[in-house]
Image 1: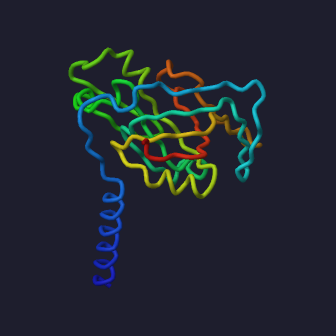
Image 2: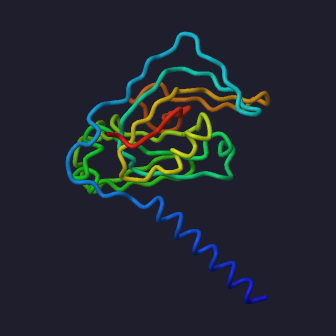
Image 3: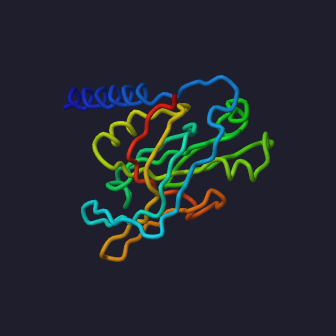
Amino acid sequence: MQRFILIGLLLIALLGGVHWWHQRPLTQAPGVLAPDAPTQIDLDQGTTLSRGDVTLVTRARFELTARVLSREDYRFDAGASLAPMDLALGWGRMSDSAVLAQVQISQENRFYHWHVERFPIPRREIEQSSSNMHMIPADDTARRELERVRPGEVIHLEGFLVDASKADGWRWRTSMTRDDTGAGACELVYVESVLPAQ
């Protein structure tokens, strides 16, 4: 029995090591890597999409090139089957390694947290140049692309901002601005493609 437990523990450790290797952070030289803010075109009348028992309504066409500050995968919360991953993304000076070296970044429970001992750039710039985004893969190709994303990487993402709902009253709404903070400030992104930026 102990032998099976040991083998099981070794397999778990091996899988964890493989997972870490595929998602290990990339190191980038100092300098702004993603200078532009996301592009958003609001839609007067959105399209309705279905994902199992979830209804999605597109709110805006959305596109950005950003540095991945952090990623967190979800398997067990209420939104995991729809959005299995969150990416904390940064642009402007929040894509610069010299700035990020002074910002501690983490994710948990669908939130992105940052902390500084001393502000390398103004607080409002940090808030407006980074965001936690919940990723809904549009198809299996987008899912595979998302699974390959690594912290530190600069990616180009295209898709839609969407609101999600179920018949039982469950709702998950996207932020429509990069100016907000706190609960409700995350974007819910229907991802059609996400690739390394050229």
